[in-house]
Amino acid sequence: LFFFFFKQKTAYEIYQCDWSSDVCSSDLATEILERKEEFLRVIGPTFGRLESGYIAPIVNRVFGLMKRAGAFAPPPEILRDRRITFAFDSPVSQARKQIEALAVRGALEQAAPFLEINPAAVDLINSEEAVRTIFAANGADGLLLGEDALMRIRAARQVAQVTEVVSDVVADAVGGAE
Image 1: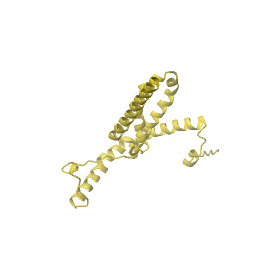
Image 2: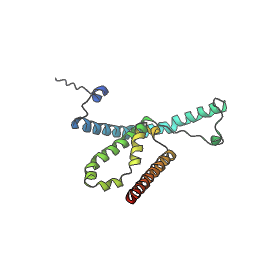
Image 3: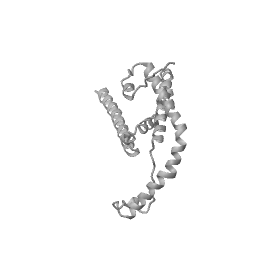
Image 4: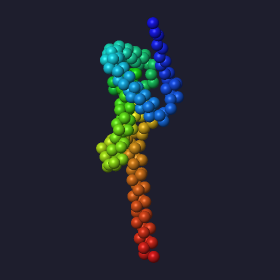
């Protein structure tokens, strides 16, 4: 009779892993991705039904009761007479986002050698969407700028670039005239 004992790594031991090692980082990332995908295949449908059939009606009911009881301050003008719905960010949806972010990272890592050969191929990648996906998967999408702020920054950058070009042209014209 033989007994075999296998020690499973704790999260701390995994964190302490030598991330410069190709074996550790790539194998671990692949294993994590595979385990999360398996988790979603097994638990996803059940958890989705639980959210839509049990949690959502309870949250909506409690919100409605609290609203009628005056537990909330009056809504801003823009929200008056509008129906409020809730979106759940469940562990399953978070796992899906993380898998998507890992897929983006993996795709970029696999594409890197080709992008070195042909830098123009970078034009195929929607880098802004990739960044948004990665930030959302890590719960940091609130750190990203909205479209209005992004447009203002880009417009200011474009004005600065045009101003620099014009000042260079004027400097060359003045320097050439002397």
